[in-house]
Structure formats: C-alpha cells, structure tokens
Length: 117
Image (cartoon, rainbow, N blue to C red; front, side, top):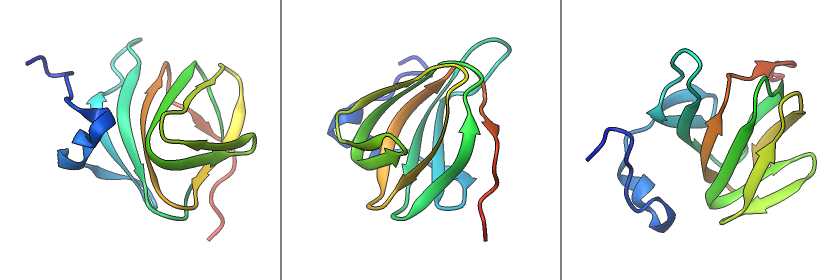
C-alpha cells in the first residue's frame, strides 16, 4: 500500500489513525506533509469548541467534512460538505460540536490574528 493511502475515511477509518498536536483543541494526521512546491494533505480533528483564528490562504485550500460540523463566517458545513477556499481568501474556522475534515493546502496559511486567551 502506498504511503499516501488511507482506507475507509468516509466510514470512520480515521478513528484508527494517530493524530498529533496542531493547535489548541485541534490535532492533525499528516497524509502528505508540505515538501517544496507539493501541497500538504492531512486530517484535522477539532474538539468541541475548537477554533482556528483569522487566516489568509496563500494557495487553494480544499476541505471535505468527514464527521461533525465545521463552521466559518459563511456558514456551517456538515458531514459530506466539500469546501473550496480560493487563494487570497480570509476566514476563521471553528466547530461547536467537534469535527474531522480532510484538507489539502497548496501552501501553508498565514495567521492574521492570534487567538485571544
């Protein structure tokens, strides 16, 4: 099996994968880390109430919600939602209930406003 293959993600296979710290309340399972001009691909798991502060997309970002609800300033996205954030777009992200998303970034994002503690 190729290193980049993950099985049964849409039926909960992500539950068996190891996650590591990413942000407060958000963990990550890297499928493919950023390398040169290659995009990053990962699973993000948000605990209930977790947030990612206002940030700008330096490249295209695509998201598939696998579990729960992810929200931003334009709406709430439940399981099966597919989201495309264009290069140059800005938003913050949160999940009131917790969620798991499959995400691909062309380039890392730029955080514009840090979380307020």
